[in-house]
Amino acid sequence: MRILVTGCYGYIGSLLVPRLLAQRHQVFGLDSGLYRNSLLDDDQLIVPCVAEDLRDVTRADLAGLDAVIHLAAVSNDPLGRVGRELTLDINTRATVRLAELSKQAGVPRFLFASSCSLYGNAGSALLDEDGRVSPLTSYAESKALAERNLALLANENFSPTILRNATAYGVSPGLRLDLALNELVANVATTGRVVLRGDGLAWRPFVHVEDICRAFEAVLVAPRQSVHNRTFNIGRTEDNYRLGELAELVHHLVPSRMEFEPGNGADRRSYRVDCSRLAREVPGFRPRWTIAEGIEQMYETFRAGGMTRADLDSDRYDRSRALRAHVAAGRLAVDLRWRPDIAAARLNAGTERHPRPSFRATNTSSCAGPASRDVSW
Image (tube, rainbow, N blue to C red; front, side):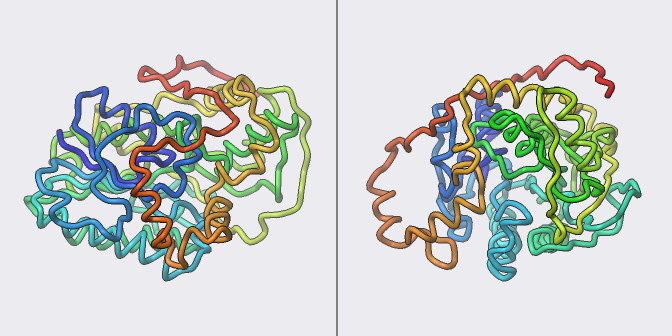
């Protein structure tokens, strides 16, 4: 298949692209490169790029494709604080425009990375894909609006599929440490402390980044009638945790001391999700990672790679910090586009490599996934 992956240098995209190439798909990319200097390894990410900014893609860029996997976005709730209108412009308007152009270009499948964050504050009720959507942030609102508009585009020639990802975790070439479990494990790997902020009572569903990739791969090749205009929660139903329980599990699995800090009072999100639909309706998908295995993978990788507290505090692995650093240095305009002189310099640099981070661990992903094992605590 000829596939466009937007956000190809991101946390999910940098892991998904090599997997698709290994399956002999022809892959094209689209990515603004805002976070490319955080990549642990970009040797397998050299794919033709149709455009840099999502807002600049044209119908001609999409001609001849069999599918679009749309991952690119202002990427999580804290980052959505760059402003509601800008978040909606990129995550909703540009997404719908990309889908409309894809439909006009004859692209039959459009896979959209949404988020379980749009469930908002649902308490302890277990929600399936028909559960009430109640977004509390600009990011979640942008995903909910994009979903609604994509559904309206569906017809006999254009099949959108919505994949609502749980909170991601795990090692990826485009590593992020601004995600709940990744941050907990990075803290304990570099300081020996498990830090729980707030009361820890909020619920979250979790999913390993490799299992997100497996979900996209399964939907990509599933029979059209199984995925046409369908929505799927992506994760494991058994991996809904209170944040305090998650911190306790990290503390149980790796040598550490437990510490508590006030905070997170502004974050009212709390939700549990039922993730059984995808495995039930698309038999080619089965999640393979447990939370315990993911914690061990990250801890071992961070320690073996020599991660330090300086890495944890840097802007390389935190999307909000990276954007602020770009803006402070004058590289980005207020609309999150590269300033013209920076864009020209990047274009002239061609395929010049970005400096590698000091943390040099290689990605330890496995197509087979880990062996399952029970962990009691």
